[in-house]
Image 1 (cartoon, rainbow, N blue to C red):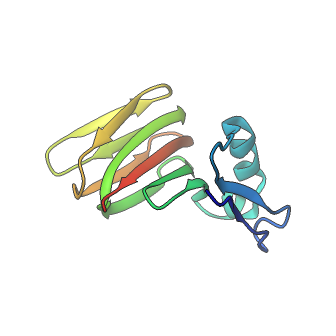
Image 2 (image 1 turned 90 degrees about the horizontal axis):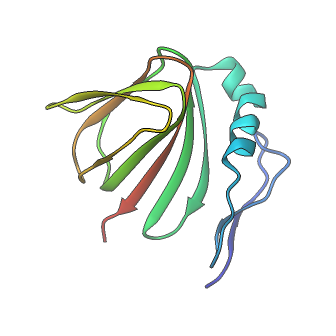
Image 3 (image 1 turned 60 degrees about the vertical axis):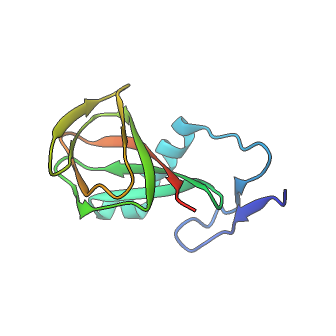
Length: 131
């Protein structure tokens, strides 16, 4: 397996982070601190960072300020959402659930959903992509 890294960008000049290898370590607390320090977090209602990316799976850490919303959308694969800090409202056409720190859900492929932060929140989105 070839290691894959993300290069430094103007938004994240400190740079390279490993995105895919036979073993990828992820310090979630450090990523949350990083998100909170970035201009995007300070100037908008959200910020995110991809922390793992392969052909079949993607893991993204998202931060939303209170009342920020991810408008209805769907994913091309099964997803899980795990709340690390705060509380979010996760809605599908059939059901709405409130998720707080330590709670998570799994959602079938293609189901339209939206997310609204009830408080400043950080959550992991894992996408297992369809082939």
